[in-house]
Length: 136
View 1: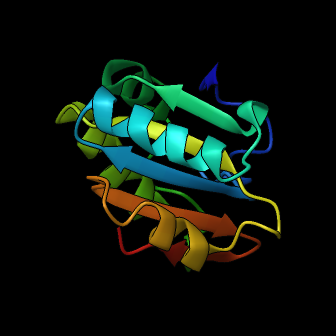
View 2: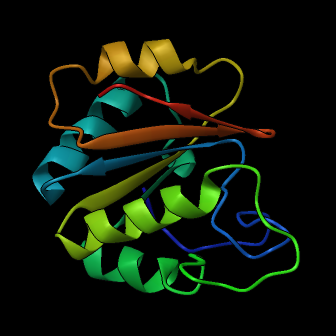
């Protein structure tokens, strides 16, 4: 499993966090995140498709990708900025992040079912123009 590192293509044109093609999962402890990663690996998710981030590192990377009171000429019609703020707040509260590269084969329903007994505190799948809430 890799350490999460923000890469090009994980933000909108406005610079807001939007990792299209990924599932972002938040967990209250590192142990919970590692259990989820283990379950995903056992289910066939490739090690290279999993990224982990500590709360401090994730919060640091999210800072600047959230537009709290930005005066921008192109307002967002979506909720990606609010979602990024929420993710940053969870990291600030000590939640770890597990980011999964999610190909078409890995359905959201399957991930929710697979991780139903973990302590997932938040989950979303980023699709083209759609953020799908995962009920963890």
